[in-house]
Length: 283
Image (cartoon, rainbow, N blue to C red; front, top):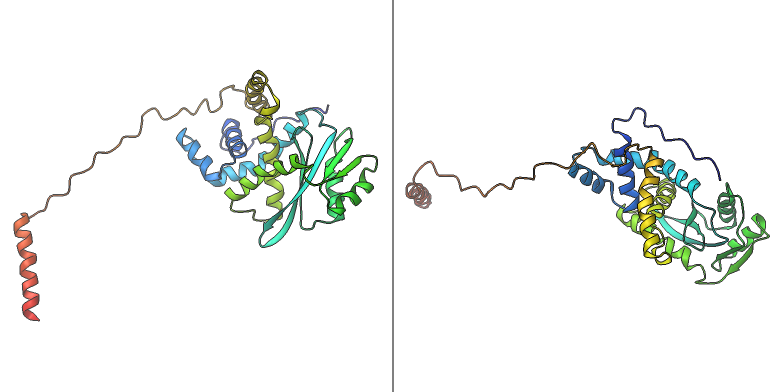
């Protein structure tokens, strides 16, 4: 197990680590837009802009995700692989993704082509930093996967059957949901950044509930925030402790009465009547 990375530096940031970590957690865990996070924090009394949330997710999101990835246990020995198409500025790109048999996302890669060179790049990136290789890799019937696998890790058994890698296909669903909320990705770098950060953070708070008992799931749910506070460097156990909710509820104003006329209503109507008669007479 590698040594845990140090706490991220929040130097030259106006908001404390509690606010930054809480904003990144809301954005990645619940697939919210930046303006949604801005409104949720405004209800807690924290006034910021959606651009601040976007910059925090870009600056600290990947660092949080890398720390969580180093903290997790060794992945399983069966790796389903899958590729999906993404439209970025009118051009078709491929999003490569690998998970283990438990559904934990191992890595993702965005490439403009879906060929053997892209598959080799993804496999080498996938094996980087791991102490072991899988026993079995599962993919669809794409020929480039088999050719790249024979060059990168020839000792691994490779199975190519349709619908045997459904676990990898299901792992694409959160990315598709977030992509719709963001009105698609703006560039290939944007498409590479947000799944690479959102996957480990969301997976940390979203374990495979169907594979756990109710007691084990509750224990994981209680331990996940403590680990997140260690990753973000929040010393206080209560997030946003210094930013309480608004103490006074919003006052609902009563409907105002219509303004009174400065002249009596009858006289006001007579004036309009006389003006109308004058215009008819001139015609």
